[in-house]
Image 1 (cartoon, protein in one colour):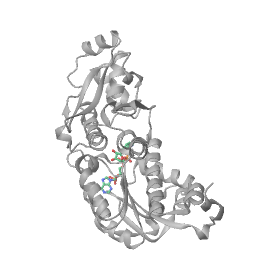
Image 2 (cartoon, rainbow, N blue to C red):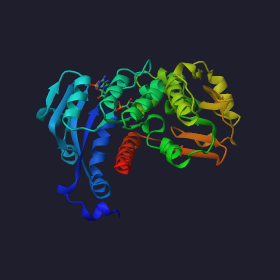
Image 3 (tube, rainbow, N blue to C red):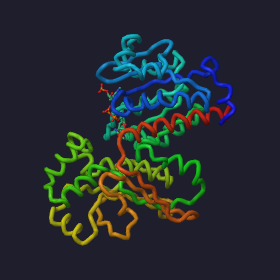
Image 4 (tube, protein in one colour):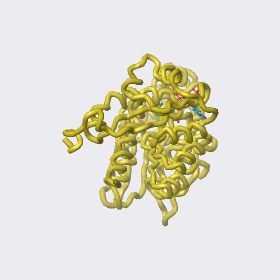
Length: 360
Ligand SMILES: NC(=O)c1ccc[n+]([C@@H]2O[C@H](COP(=O)([O-])OP(=O)(O)OC[C@H]3O[C@@H](n4cnc5c(N)ncnc54)[C@H](OP(=O)(O)O)[C@@H]3O)[C@@H](O)[C@H]2O)c1
């Protein structure tokens, strides 16, 4: 137990004022998770989480000048509605960030929809928040895939933090592991199964479904989106592979520089034959370094029984890292759902706070 835990009383806790930009599945799961950890945050970090703003595209952007205690807000049947009733509306996301900062918010949780074309407008919003001196945590792959180096440079310039653990493998501590525990390990390459929709659709086809039936079934299970082709054509895996290649291998790739082949053109015969031979086809992400250059690709490949990626059954994600000093390290996330993503956001928030406390 830390020193703080012995002395923390509600009055002595420091307020941590948060802005929630985007209030969909992840944010709605994050808020009760955050509230459920209020005692831990108080005892270990001496803070009390307060929601200063909630903004969404269709319902508008709202700032509460004093903020509402996250624990109290999470108890409401409809927290967003309750917040909106008590808060002031502002016109745009940009004004939301400025007004939130004025109201004392120090951390933006950017949880809006992915734009796979260029990461906008989330990229601009993150840029504004970092420039204004706020820390930012995001689960949104777009800004990270398109502009990680710029955003990290901006964060350094303004002495704030930018974290994105949930973008690739939900809450699995991949970036935290490599940043804090595998420093100077000599990362050589990685191979991974990162797209749950394509894994599930391929395994359903192996069980006898047609492609269309497999997609419908994956949609029924809540895994595939209404438009599943962003996943099946490999774009989701490309975004994740870009982030991994740039973060783990020091690449400077954009999504367009990752070789891409989805599963659209695989014949059912090829899928069945490969599965019968004990080498089911899965959409594999991989990248390696040659003479400081990073080469990355996403492609359907047969996975043999001996392949470490073979553990990736159903919607399970797996990544295998090849390192100089630690050999092969493999991480498996079993059938992730939205709570893992929300936990990744919470874990980033905690890291931000711990690092702030180290600095002061
Ligand atoms: N769900 C997961 O398990 C998971 C896993 C890993 C990563 N992620 C990523 O996490 C992010 C959030 O996912 P989600 O499942 O919560 O998405 P979601 O349910 O579709 O919710 C997205 C939210 O963002 C809002 N939004 C979209 N564009 C906006 C804008 N320009 N300004 C303000 N608000 C905007 C939406 O508002 P309206 O409803 O008003 O449009 C909605 O409240 C996405 O980038 C997703 O790719 C999700």
